[in-house]
Length: 383
Image (cartoon, rainbow, N blue to C red):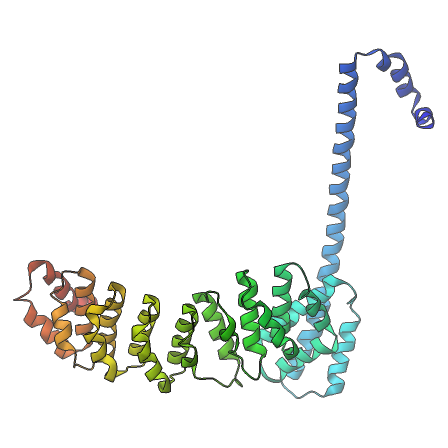
């Protein structure tokens, strides 16, 4: 401390000896507080300054690396989108990309991100080329390390990279995450397994006990649309699942792929305890235009919940076979506004026979029910 004391300028030493030592304790503490605050503020400003300088420097370097990556990949895709490529061509592209500082985490991740964007937007031989570049640069090791991370978002990112770029060897490992409590990780694992598994891509449905959300179902449908080599199972296989969202998803898949061989199993869902499952089953009957089941719907009408009753009326209108016109006619007299509104719409969908019934009902309907019929008969609204 004595050495530090003698290093101070004369002015400060004189101030300390002549004045500071004679101040009351409270004044000394105040002086020390001011000095410490000043030093802390100065340190913060210096940290901010050097951080800004570093960020500016790194931003320039990142833009430079990104330009190099874009130039190599864009040139390769333009070249090989119009002609075939051989192993030597791939080696040339890989050697160009190896000139980048791939030992840096940031550069590897930047390159992977660009490869994924291109892989999603191209198909055919260019798609295969992108996956080959990913493997030859051993970037899959970078992605695989993320699967061992403690952070869910790192795991999800690793799964997305590996599944998008076709690393099939990790497919079975993804089954560990299909029931994750984290919704993003769970959804990424399910989508990844559907992309990568060659033997039984829908096997994750045997294990999942978590809710398959509607927008995730859309993502899974998108994966199915992109996979041209997939062997579709009979989705009625999962109608007995204890997970209602799995049953609903499989009903939608039956409709999407028009699996008429699953109609018998679809009929068994009339007794399903879940209202949502029964509602989806009724919608499916309409989408598949199952005329033979139309009467079964109307005979079970009174045993169903209100929302299912609405779907039954809509389905009768969608099938529009004409055999259930008397049922729809009765529904026009319902005291429930929604039921008579949907009944009027379904009658209108039957064309001329339905409209004839609507016209004949105008004289016999109560005043409060006529507005619905007049609404449906108004050609200005249906044109």
